[in-house]
Length: 100
Image 1 (spheres, one colour):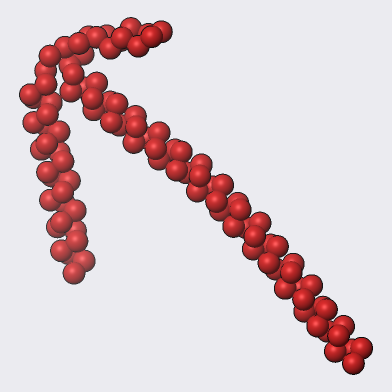
Image 2 (cartoon, one colour; image 1 turned 60 degrees about the horizontal axis):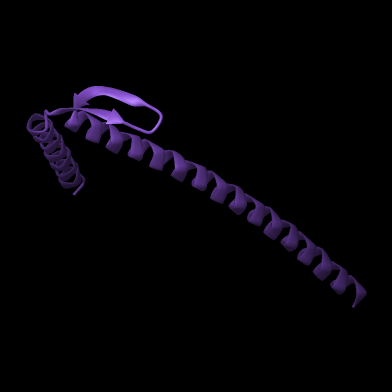
């Protein structure tokens, strides 16, 4: 079953690569990228689209890593609180047994 998963992943990667090559060959018109404060060089439309796609992927990964770090920190704080509460509960139970 593992080999079937690998073949599927390879087929998907090959399809994406072929689609990217076809996209690049079909969109060769050169256009300058004009942002408000920056004028980019004249480059093919396909390169601008692929760069924007890659930048969005990297930005998304970076933001998700920040969110993941924040969630892990919250989980560690909650685990420490739970551990302290368990220690307190066990000490209260021990004191209750001693007094009875």
